[in-house]
Length: 137
Image 1: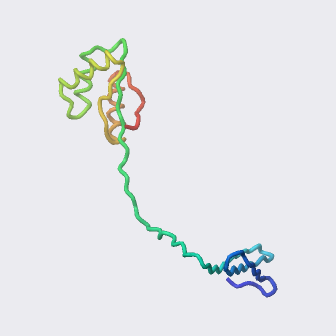
Image 2 (image 1 turned 135 degrees about the horizontal axis):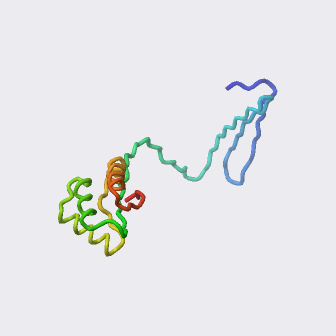
Image 3 (image 1 turned 120 degrees about the vertical axis):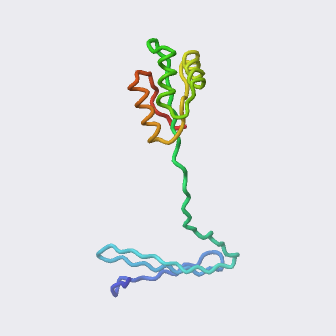
């Protein structure tokens, strides 16, 4: 960057230690400011760690599908919906979860990626089950 003649000034400062500090600055009509420093110290130099450009890949978060207890869905309907819409859900697992929903007020019936969780959540909701909003696992 070139500085127009008459806009450049130098300032010499003498700190308490044996350092030379030169600061060059320029302020012109366009309000351009540049500062450069040349520091020589007698103390041991501090080495700044090198910045590395490393991409850290984090997995997508999982989401929980939670079914809530209600007074109008039967045990049989809840268990049937779980086996129908949740992949890999056995009849025994569905009945255990249905009992948990009834006795504890809610149960997490599936955990996984957001897109699948949205699908299963909407299917269970359309089937009439009372659903909690999707939550991060």
